[in-house]
Image (tube, rainbow, N blue to C red; front, side, top):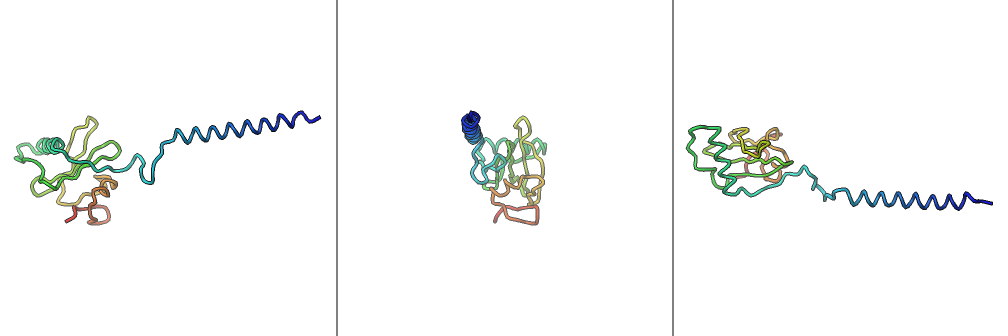
Length: 143
């Protein structure tokens, strides 16, 4: 008599079914990202009048007494990377790089004569803003 064989086949089917259900459950639970759509992507955002006003306020906080109306039109880059927002805006002759802090308040993090570098702004944002290479780690606005 071969009693073990029937139980063995049933056990194999049970294990296969269990494995298949685990695979299906894992596939359903896992986030689905298209190529490059991971959580670390830079996202280009529209700099609304409210955002530009907030950037101006941050600029004035960093430069007490500065008389600026707002960023020069057409020279503001704004985006988000990993939950932090960044902006590059031109007040006068120079670009100013901004970042939001933990309370979502803008602050000046760098002023530049043109170069926007990857040690200050994430490279993913530099890509979505279509900035042009200046050297191996810095970029400039397209002309």
